[in-house]
Length: 360
Ligand code: TLP
Image (cartoon, rainbow, N blue to C red; front, side):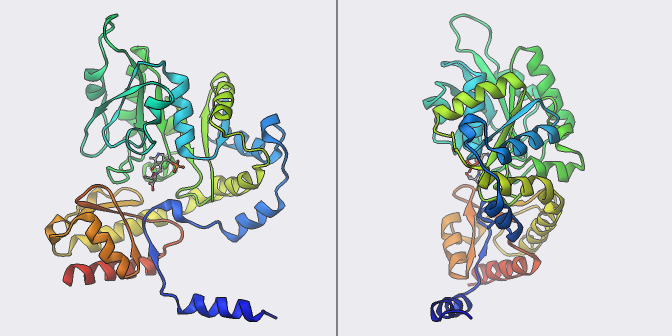
């Protein structure tokens, strides 16, 4: 029998308006299966390499990506920053797309922790080509700061979840290697890219020197990312992770949810992509909103609201009043991200909320 306190909580729950949260795919809650696995997880001290569940997750990640080794890290940011630290020397430049996550959202850690600067390249759809990269590699002259790393993001978050055509990514990797440069992939949403391309993650990432991917985004785990690469690189990554305070001890509790995310959740990502397309098509017909639904490839929908006379943040405040949570990509553009906790019906309600805001 439930206690009066549970009753009160239930009532509060039912009287609360249902909120549709499209701010990010990071907002998902662990599934019941994940919670059970977490409760039952076998654990040990991972700093001593003794957490069997983390060891299993790292092994599976390495297998799935066709690599020698993998390391579990608390966040995508830490995974990227470990890779940057290992690939570069202080005083070097990193070539990446101008809206890249490592450049804009990682607290300038590439400068702070690794002593590097960024040589950004703007590309409307976020996709770089070798021609663009080549022009930005510094000449090998002793009095010029040197390029240390090329970094790509797939899918590209702030360009709207865009996907690297395989040939373009392969070409950048091959040519960068010929030029003596390593290439790191921020593959926070690489499983979304794999679904969009209809190819396994191992195939689309095989030419990169290192790959970071997140369990805590579309795959629905509460916490965690992995960095994959060769054995020596991952051994060195363990020391850098420890230096950053990422030695997490009995974190097998998290890895247990991560294993379910890794094994089972990629199979449902196509639903998020279909919902994103559905949202994009619905938005395209609304006054003051500018979006080309044909450009929505995965689970991120970015649209320009300047035609409504509102800034992106004013627009998202209005949406919040209608119980729809959204993010901004810049001052003019709003970002919706679909995920496993928003179904088609929730997307229909989201469109209804947007309609009301533009019609008000
Ligand atoms: N992205 C978050 C925000 O930080 C913008 C989001 O809501 O999309 N790489 C990419 C491409 C990302 O999108 C993110 C998170 C990360 C790295 C960092 O992952 P975490 O949040 O685990 O540090």
